[in-house]
Each structure stands twice: as C-alpha cells, then as structure tokens.
Image (cartoon, rainbow, N blue to C red; front, side, top):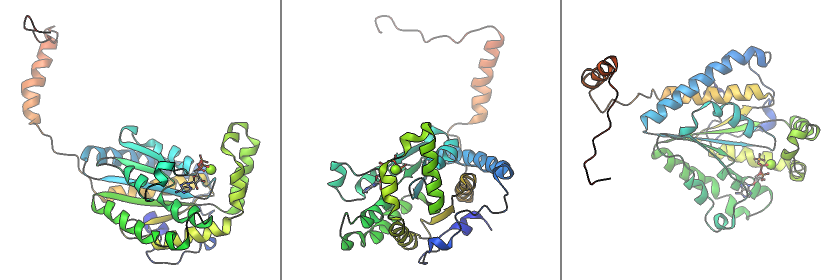
Length: 294
Ligand code: ATP
Ligand code: MG
C-alpha cells in the first residue's frame, strides 16, 4: 500500500489520536536500514519539484502542524530542504500581528498561497484558528466552530485554482515530547528553542488532541487531505512525508513544456556557427554602438 493511502485521514472519519502508534516505523529496523529509501525519495522529490517549476501550470501547498517539538522545523530542513529554493517558500505563522488580527483569519493565509510553479510550505497555518483559538477560548465557540466549513471552502477555492494541497499532522506521543524538551534543556545549542510556554501548553495536551482530532476529521477532504504521520522517529517522519509528496507529484505526470523555438534550427544556424567561430579563434563581438548614443 502506498503511504498516501496508508496515512491519509478518510474524509468524514472520526480520529482517535491515542489509537495511532506515534512510534510506527513500517518494516525498518532503524534509520540506517531506511537511509537508502530516504535518499531515493529525496532525489525523486527534487526531480518532481523541478518539473513543477518548469511546467509553471500549478502549485503545491504543504501544511505542517504538530504539538510543540513535533518536528515541523526538522521536516522542513531535512525533507523539503532538498528542493531548489528558487521555486520554494516557507512561511511561519505566529500570533497574528495587530494588522492581521484586524482582518478575517484567512486574510494573511491567502496572501501566502503559492503562485503557479511554486511550492509553499506553511509552518503552522490557518488551522491554529481552530486549535489554539479553541483551546484558549481566544474566540467564542460559535466563531471557531464555523471555521471548519470556511477552511474547507477556502481550500476548495485554492484547489480549483490549480493548487495541490497536502496537510501533515506530525504525530508524537506525550512521552516523546518530554524527551525532546529534556534534550533542549541539556544541549546549550538548543536552549534558544525552549520556552516556558512549551511546558504550560503541555498541560493542555488533552484539549489540543481533541481540537486536532476534530480539525483532522472535519477538514480532510479528497481534494485537500490530512495525513497523520507517525513522528516519534524523526527519520521515519522524513521518509513518510517525502514519500507522500513524491507519490502525489509523480501521479500528476508533469511534462516539461514544449520549446518555444525550433531547437534544430537553433542548433544548425546559431550553435554550430558559434562552435565554428571558437574553433577559428574568433571571440564574440560586442554590438557596435552608434556614435552620439550612450
Ligand atoms: P514553533 O513552536 O512552531 O517551532 P516558535 O517556537 O519558533 O515556533 P512560537 O512563537 O513559540 O515560535 O510559535 C508560534 C506561536 O504562535 C504558537 O504558540 C502558535 O500557537 C501561535 N499562533 C500561530 N497562529 C496563531 C493564531 N492564528 N492565533 C493565535 N496564536 C497563533
Ligand atoms: Mg514554540
């Protein structure tokens, strides 16, 4: 079974996160045994992004959500970092600025949507508005509960306009989160990553889990699916995400655009003439300037 089917949240299904094994690693013993596969998919990902960029017809939006220390940054770095930066943009969505907060919740998101030929990666997203906003009562229930439908409509609009959307929930266990916090405390190079709020938010683990379950179940659609990625093992998370992106892009069978010029003519008339000139020791001449003009 391909990973897209395996980890996809079926539209309309009820999600129970504590029933899903965050430590799953398929048939792989450890990172070493998966290395070749990870490299293969990373390479295929690079090739597919090159085609998407060259084709310049559609775009890809990758959304990453997780509990704190769930590995969003690591996923961007290891998996998506293999793509050519020229056709890629990463957006991190933090607490809305005063200007952003004065608009509807999708305003800032829409502006960051990818244009044709581009891959956009969202580190957090509009889903925060049905997660933290719900858990901390930043808006009343009657406001956030309408957002699932608004999100589905918004994503439909993007898809209808040529954007492919893949949404990944990086699933770690509460124990694994604590282990990662400890690593951050023990390693001076990671101190900058830890904050008090990591611990205070952990108190709301259950509330966040319910909020995620609703968001995943209600906003996984055929056109913009959610995937729940077992992410306790960072290497497995990297493998699963890159594999799903590759499966999606390869299924599009993207073609390089037809040349705008007659390649045979270019070769015979121009290229061959240049080759001859070089052989005869001639250098390319600059255009003669007309006198009186600069
Ligand atoms: P991360 O934890 O994603 O690696 P970070 O630690 O570098 O990011 P933070 O400022 O801790 O940066 O994280 C961003 C914070 O902004 C999160 O607590 C997130 O819940 C919050 N946030 C994002 N979008 C919204 C929103 N729409 N409304 C309220 N808070 C939001
Ligand atoms: Mg944080």
